[in-house]
Image 1 (cartoon, rainbow, N blue to C red):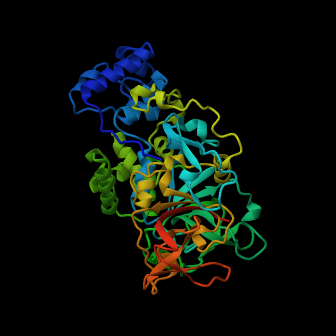
Image 2: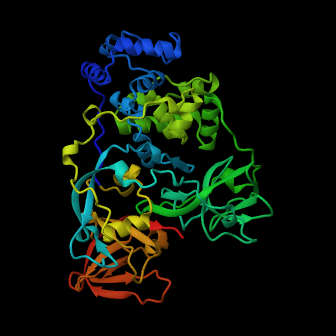
Length: 530
């Protein structure tokens, strides 16, 4: 679906007028807000809002701190993310930046930051596609139906699942999971699935220990002792005792795999040699939290600053850049950044959940307002574009079946599709349903749901010297109107299909442009992990 535009911060005059209008809706003046902040927090507090705030904002060099924005949210009753967005900082950028920037270690993506009041394009079933074919473009099965509010489409609101981006140094589950992939983790897993009677688990788990987050299979050793098991690569075998030295966060049940990143994974030295597990840290003050998070992400101060520069460049705003000396001051002096742009950057670079950061700097998120700002104040899509059909999920059609198989749709990743696939302006024409029952010719399509296709890459290549996971994957349209997805290459004008199936298949030879056409190269796959 189309990504929401990232907007620059508003001119200061317009910003002051917006704040005045927002407070007026609540029958508040700035003077009253200032008085209430003094009564709640004290005049010398970081939360205090001065009565001359408008004058400071018009000066063009001042922006309220994270503490003051929290006070505005609490007093007005409007959500903290809406106030931050009004001042030019969008919390949804945290997940977008984390998917856009490479990371050595696996990082949790905060799905709770998606705006439940955002309006997004939605779809309905096309008539005459029941039952759906096993493999087909989505445009044959669905059609646009107007906009829907995100919160009305999300069943569990992010409460049942965790999401993580696998780091480049997390290849314990390679090639079943690939560095750079986004995985969904079901955290409602009983211990009996982890501690099976001897042997290695067949399922992949997300675990946390003192070296960071890792996706891997587990071997149970005695009571409450687990050992991460590497599938292919030579990681050190280390025994971890739960819950002191390790936590099992859940079981991986879905993977969104970008297929353009095919670099050979490497095992870092600190994980290849035997290492001694340390106890997991608990709640910490901001300085210790930042220091331990940076060490866990395997970053030096200079490297962390370089990542912040990349984030600032992506957003086109230098306020997101943090110098090495400033990062050092945050850790050593145990102080929080004043600007919320810096807070967002720290969450991105160090893999921190935003609410964890708030609590570490002395902010209680539960005190913030709960009500959404009116759409026009925070540049949400107009409700006039919304669909009049309020029952788009019923009827037992293809869309309902797809949503049931997905269980939960990661709407917070809607702006990351271009980053993960390399495609801009993605539409229904580029997505293919691959979840029907048919003879799968490639392991990436086993238990598959959707594939995203680059229709501009139509010339197939097959590299005889490369392994399966480095081979391009293509969607083919045969003369009889059926679709095929496989690795293939041209040999003397003949298209040769190379099956990688559990069943025996001979390489199929088809006349190029006569028996078969290449629709495009698959650049991303969403599949269940079982």
